[in-house]
Length: 438
Image (tube, rainbow, N blue to C red):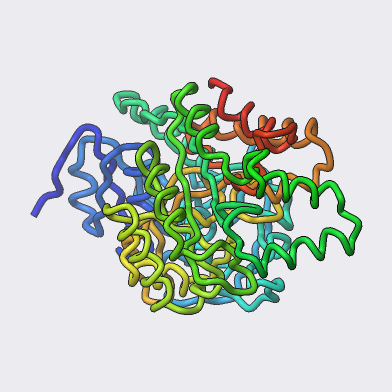
């Protein structure tokens, strides 16, 4: 049966259609370039197609738009691939092609390698929290972590196609900014209970932290507001700048790494519901739920009961991801969006992109129904710059990179570092980012 012939549809000829190939073609053309794409193994259908088309194989059929294929998208499982990064007019690339190829590298295999997090399936040494270290990554080792290479590649591919097929419409990509606020601890001093308050007081005095001691009791006596309770100020800031923020609340039972106040206190439910009246509220999954699916489901149900609406988004405490187990658990717990794809110690693009993508599970060679929203900046990564000026410059640089490709600029801050009661450099930086127009 002949392939449907749409003027804006790109037809791709290949000798074999695999789940990996179908996944990455659909992502690049449909999600990134907003263009229909179809695959065929029939030479006669390819020749008959009158619209834009390209071949993806080892050799071109004739003189068509041709990209030489690497074996990666036709393989199964994981193997340790030796990769040499080269330069393509100022942009890093890998999986080089022969001269017959229109592009000097296999854009589809390289994009799949980064977006699937292929390298995170390979043996590696994890950090103290079981996380994949940024310095282990191909991007980290080769100096392109701060460049959304997949987005740049896609736009250059489009430019090359448009040169061959001038009738193609330009892709409609638009910059989008989303501030994300983690809420691991609702209050710094209030509602902690007598034992935790006395313990904190003892630590303050034993370490001669007298300023902290006086601040604690000024809050407890009602003289000053609790510095973590920044929600009214944030709501006003976001509304004033017409920005929609996402809040991720930790609703876990107390543990070594999860030290919020008891979720059974009425003030917790009241505060979470009040934020949900103005913004999207989602779950900050606890440290322990990282390896406990039942606990993850329990925390999600708890938030649903608080706000009486579906909870579809999740972030993981301390930005912990185990590929692919974390995303299998996310799907099993009935989330359909994740905001953990980033590094806690480095700004940039963990998956090489600033465009949301569906996670591809290489273990089962299938796309999972969870949309991964890459996070470009997590506040903890900004401390390495030592002063507000350098951190601001880095944030602006990343924002510019994303704006130029029409991507999503997702940043993560925490109510623990945003303080509106006194000057705070993180708060100042956050306010600047929210107030800045493109």
